[in-house]
Figure 1 (cartoon, one colour):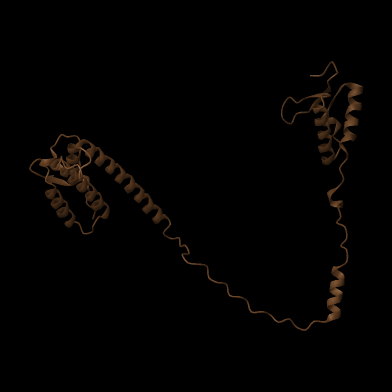
Figure 2 (cartoon, one colour):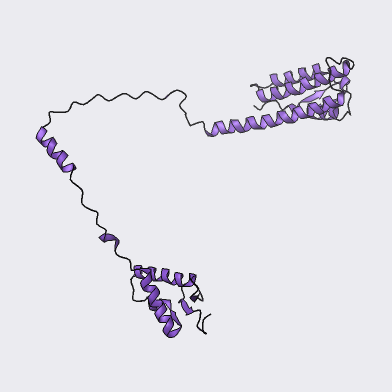
Length: 245
């Protein structure tokens, strides 16, 4: 069974007949005199509607209490317009305040719905609410009797300087200066060359160092580099050469 929808609550009053949502709209727009609205009959209609349901809708009841309390406050302000100690707002300001309260109530209701959804999403998760259990200390283990000579020999082996680690697996890298001199010699003879042809017979490590040397020449402004497309041959030309690009 669904809960009581306050906005669709049917009312049959002397001054109004229709849903509660329309009644509230007419009151806030000053299209219906609040003094003609019987709040007691509204409460009885809501209670009769709630009795018809098998379960109590707490959200609908909370919304109804907010709305009825606001209507009662508005009526009290109209009945005692001269009581400044009790009434601080005129009817128009009270209507605006009611609208703000309804908007705030709807925001809180939406937030409560989101929290309820989050609770359902994490319903299978359990968190520790108390302190962590104190770990049980392991029982001390008794060492068997030790041979003093064996202990001294073990300490003597630990005191020996370990051998230096081998770097043979890392290989050797030729110096960048070697390729700088090589490329400058080629450029002095012909003024340009293809990088891929110059390093074709070198290892991958040597090719990488040769490329670093080529970048050094470009950084120093000694050469210009061209490559028509990715993975195409790299053309290198001396800046002083008339054929340089």
